[in-house]
Image: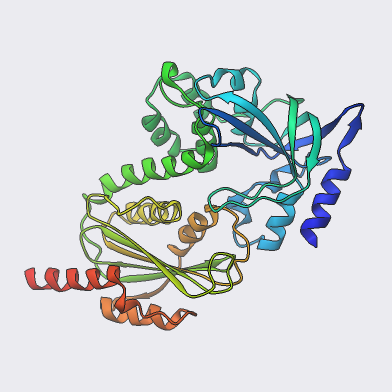
Length: 382
């Protein structure tokens, strides 16, 4: 009902002019590069109609964490009209640059906007496992910024530089908001100028996590091993995370436990993924890459390498997907919340198992069995 009310309010704030409509507000900023039709893609430019000063709250994952619940996030996303600017050639990012659409996507404050809409507004909320939900959708005839985007000095410099995209991402990470780095990559603002491309946002999210994770792992593998086992915990939006880090050369495993009655399964489902010491994993999973980055940041901060087991439990309270940003933010906070330390790996597994709401025996999982076997080998070789 709240979603329906939000959609109704947003649509009632759209001004009707002749054959079309005009949407006046401020983007948080919020802009997405789609992937359908690649290499001709669509840009989705999101604006809450009639909202300007408070627009930043409509897309603010870092500050949502722990303060904004799932229902409120859905209300906020339902309140924005997603204007589609289609047939954009990925090889020509300069068109978006000239129209300030790409620069607006990396602004650190809302940008006043006026969008002329062609045709009718489709009053639906659309979900995605990687991206934030988007609200009512319409085709954009023109998108005009009525205030200037505000860019950080570091991103301004990187836009002018001729660095390779991977180096630019790592450089930006030293001082920049990670979500703006994703948009900078997605909208073709980073990389060698002659080879810059627009990148679908879904791909850009995983690419940034992979680039930063690879860079951190190179450092982490050079550190001494962790002195004693630690168990960390965090929970948000019906997702609970237990992270075990233990004395070992770096290797990692990801275990997802999906409860029945979530939108994705009718029975308890377990998904596993393993990564070796050299950063090679069985398959690419956006959720794992997001969690992995937060754990690697922690290991880099304490200058230690370790074995890592991340257990994510998805309960029925996570009744709608809102992207994977919350995984990154929850694990980041979890690494600041140690709930057990100094025990053996077997005891840590039993401890985590006892806290799970689903009836799952972690000791019987392939990834956990491999960890236990490796621990026995390591102990024998000492």
